[in-house]
Length: 153
Ligand SMILES: [Cu+2]
Image (cartoon, rainbow, N blue to C red; front, side, top):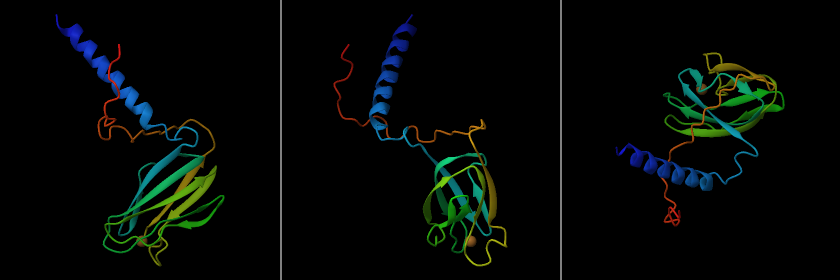
């Protein structure tokens, strides 16, 4: 049967992929892990891509999918009104924060918008389980590390 061959070449591919991944993630991602959270803003609502949070560093990406200018503001323990610049419709902006255990408020600082519904409260857990780690940074462009010598064995 040729299934053995298939398996062999499949594992070779897996090896190559693993090698490529190792090289690619040589960035200090494990030392200080940062979680990216999407905050989709519409008129007038904020939808976060996750609802469970643990203490740590986060990049909130505010995406304005509404018809009017929005922005994203976070306040809570250790953070006094961290906010993005104004985000025009169709644009996005990033906000990097360090969340501690406790309650945070996320809203749109454009006058009136919070009252219209652009207001989210989150609770950041200390170190308890509730892990919602989504590794969304997989499979970008397939192994472009030119050459590399290939299978030496
Ligand atoms: Cu707004």
